Image 1 (cartoon, one colour):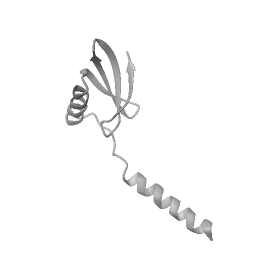
Image 2 (tube, rainbow, N blue to C red):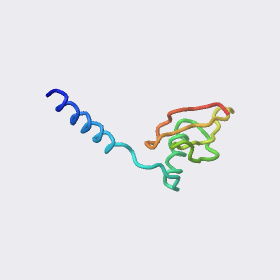
Image 3 (spheres, helix red, strand yellow):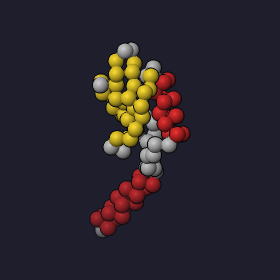
Image 4 (cartoon, rainbow, N blue to C red):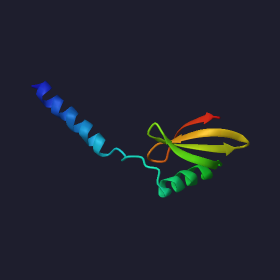
Length: 83
């Protein structure tokens, strides 16, 4: 009986999480402006923005060093690489 309760419960939780997931990432003027805004506040000078592996990828400079900065669909920096 426990299996018959847990399986539907697990499925419901998985579906609820998917429903709250952020939508498709698109490179629109609005999204590009948001990426620039977020990175500028962090001290970056943004040169170019593109999509890479389902994330925003920005080529930017900070303190004379070049970086590739990756942001998720919520415009949160998830990875930074020196270029």
